Image (cartoon, rainbow, N blue to C red; front, side, top):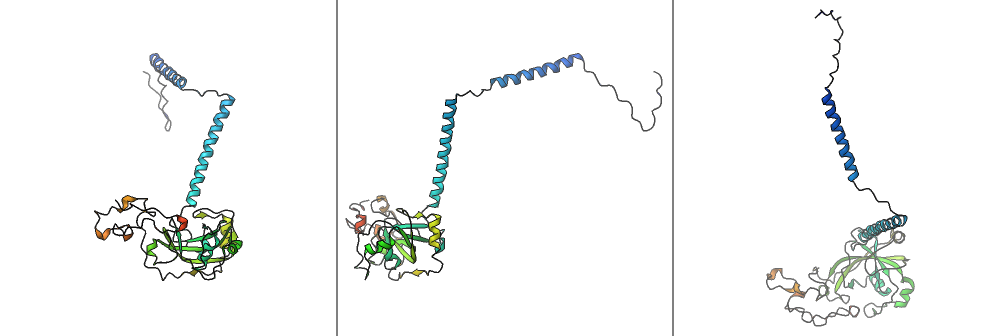
Length: 304
């Protein structure tokens, strides 16, 4: 071959011409691309397409989805409400933090508690301890008579004129015990004796539209009206010196609810339940839990 001229210093050699694939390789690549495109089209055609709905069907489907969403929201609101109204007052350690209230049937009962005469509130359930509860007087009249227990006790009619349908004060429960653990107190009717530790009487009752059977959550407006009166009010503590040392409630609250609990044959004597569920100290056939609870028939309760 003829000799090449010398390349100037600092220049690059000429680029080599691109390699041209043979015609057979080009045909194989095009065929592969056509196959991939055919597979893509077949896969897209195999996927189901959304059906075209009529206006009536679309409206029905929209209504069903709306109803399901509304039910879901309602369940969430109900769960949130139950969390707010759970039966505890741990979030109210101070009187100004009170959020829940308890309705009393009759103004005399609430008056006796706020005046520290009635140191035990007997109910078929435990009341929450550890925090403050607002005392609400319902629209029903008290059928009992406290004149023998409280000197110069006002009449129910006179108290209802001022207390009916209102929150009249606050109280705090110390513990919940059995009637036989109350030192023979005249207020220990049971089944559960809720011991009142401290009270605060409001100078101006706060009206409430409607109460509930157990502990219920006050609305924000009512809570603010109650808390607004508590700044300068003193806390009055009840005299609990007549009560014996506290013994926790063991077993069912109502006799007969859980008869298998009394099977203590295989339990050591040191770990047996208190005497109120011991076979050697049975309850009477008809206990004295107060006329408003009707009493409970306990015959055969300790038969095992």
